[in-house]
Length: 267
Image (cartoon, rainbow, N blue to C red; front, side):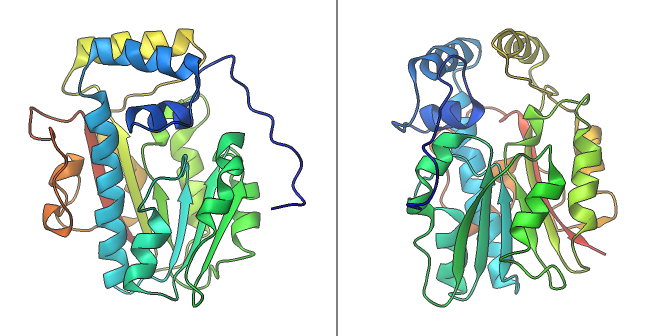
């Protein structure tokens, strides 16, 4: 890490990774993230619960994948580290697991040293890149992962920040085209299906602050898995996907959490 250039962090506008950290009660955010987070809370006070539900889904899906033989993980949009992180879950089950984290926010780079404490048997690395540049993501990931063997690609609470203009579905197809048969795609995504008025207001507020938000329908979400076989129970509200693999999140049963989650295997 000592050879990296100084990290330059833009604090003039909110960033999804830092807002996510704020929702989770973290300290690695700025007043602009706090202000936007409070605006989101005013629209829907369950937003912090949604963040924790997404994090818990990541824990359960990673545990399921590791128990089912997956030993390589590529987590794009990893966000600011919280414990336990994906590599800790995977390497607890399989100490030889290899994990590559990827994010475009320099503040995540500033905390990358915390991500690199994996097991001696495995490997844990961090890559600064943007999902909108899949070639750069895959070029960096190939230095650690063997794409001739199965890889679990995780896109947790990320794609709703990628607009249709940026070609979210095309980006996922380009990323998954690199994956071998037997690989997995793991996605959670916010939706406006359950709360259309609040969702429209949230989209407008974030757009005004320079943060895109694309709240896709169940049908649009399911399209991300074209060419994959969905793992039971298929597309679900995130906290209802294999709840037996983790502890419940406080507040998650207070109404519907407006999002979807799924894991699918490449044919």
